[in-house]
Image 1 (cartoon, helix red, strand yellow):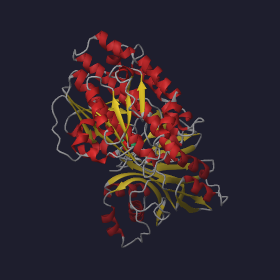
Image 2 (image 1 turned 90 degrees about the horizontal axis):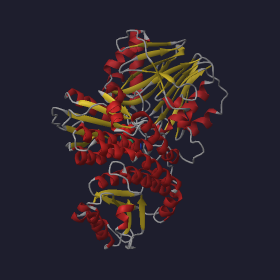
Image 3 (image 1 turned 135 degrees about the vertical axis):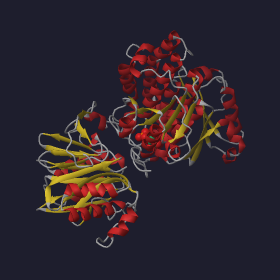
Image 4 (image 1 turned 180 degrees about the vertical axis):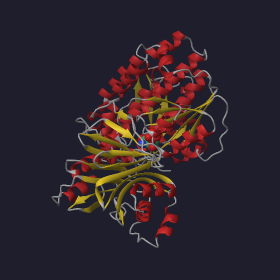
Length: 606
Ligand code: AGP
């Protein structure tokens, strides 16, 4: 949710921390702050709004500290303002935090005998708790161990103590935190994006781990046993976190989709052959039921994949929102596979869903983008979707990479169950070449989608309607439109509309009809026409084969037509067109496309 960065070394900590906070800004961008050593005292500077405000403020002094911690915030407790911004200081303890302290009111009550609280935050309470134990135990590590035992919730902390201004202490539970060293410079960060310009090698802290960073990194587990850590290597480059000349990360990441497909083919199906999938994905023949769990767009990949698993592999497939799944009664069954979908691999609800599935003795498969992230580490098996760093809050390439992995998995499971022959499976896989070409053509033709967006970017509401697999596509197309353009769009099952919601249709209201399944195309078309009868502007989104059946029908405002592809891959090109439409609507409205209001890239709180 929030972004944390820390630095100890030879360079100016202010510079390292500010560039790190810019790279982490997609995690939360309503206020930011820094604490560093100035003339042997801790100095704290905080600002409301973007990191640029903090950078400007810091330019007012000539401090050149060699140690510091920084934070960019997505407010959970208390308004986004300077007082609630991090770092927080109590006694000799100064810290930044990512996560939520669920029992902070109880702790606040206990500590209010000793501490005065200035902010509305849970973090300030955790700061006081740690300071309380530092005084009580007269030992920093013991204090962190004690505090950890008392805190309920999720946390990643970076801490500097007044009486030890050459060290940073860190600890985590649930919220992500990495640490790295390069040429005696030490870095702490919420994710690799913040330190990629210095190194791509890093250590991961496991649940409850504590570390002290000064002249070297000292790792401890939650019982303060000294531990060693394996080094991890990020496979991408600094280019992954640069715009490379694009106006927005979102447009750059849409352009990356072709490379992402290449990555997936190269890694999992180099010969475009079912044997590759058997070798690289493994064997899934023992599963009789699938439950797909995720949040937001990750959940939406499940809504599409459900039809592929059920139609082609004949496996009953449930799709669950993780925030509902974690609190509802579940009926675990033998040979049920729980597939967890997540770009960040840190989404709190999906992480908890993974744990619940394991507690109920179900196998878990993570389809994850971020390497070694929590959900990846806690799943029995993980298939990485190889989309590289995704910075724009609205997911594009990672959504499509997850959907492609699910589509390939459904081909493998259909083959394993003899629902499709080896030839059929290989013929489907051969279409991956067409998928790359079609996606390239759509992206090269992006100005066409800008022209379409010009027609309705000022609208306040619109609909996306479709049936079965297309309804799943509507859910994602509508979310993309909502989250970056703030137009109140709604995805609706086409056949459901006339049972009430059609009352919302007014003159000139845009209604997208997504139609990729020719067997039910006429049904969705009739539903689209029912809205036309009430004044809507219909936009047909379909493939060439279906469009041919309606070529003489000029009642559509626009027809967005992609090349025909087999049902396993058709969804991917359809969604690329919808991503471009949303991008241009938001661009024409002048919205902040990469950092939409009220959102953050990785939701590490409930
Ligand atoms: C999508 O554009 C949003 N950023 C959001 O819905 C996202 O898909 C959701 O928060 C899940 O994130 P995850 O894939 O990192 O778990």
